[in-house]
Length: 96
Image 1 (tube, rainbow, N blue to C red):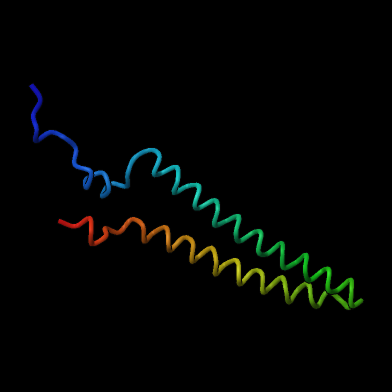
Image 2: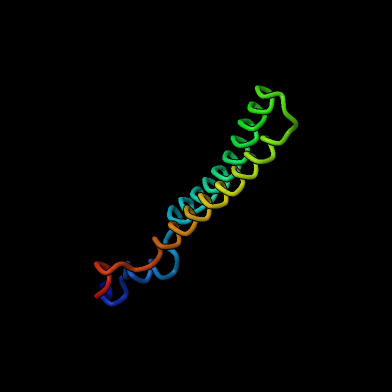
């Protein structure tokens, strides 16, 4: 005979960080934030290189637009990681 008080509570699993698949999804979201950052920097460098080649200037645009890509990539990656952390907090509908 099984004990009804021994069944795992879904709220307990939420407190401990979830199961296997939830940790895998969290890892994929973290990799996605890194890819988002890297692609923003690379896109800024490529656009700056194109502007420098078109306007026949020194690597001024590549540095400026690359720096803007760096700042934008950091901002987007931070926003993505913070949104992932907010998913762990209990919602009003989950509270007793």
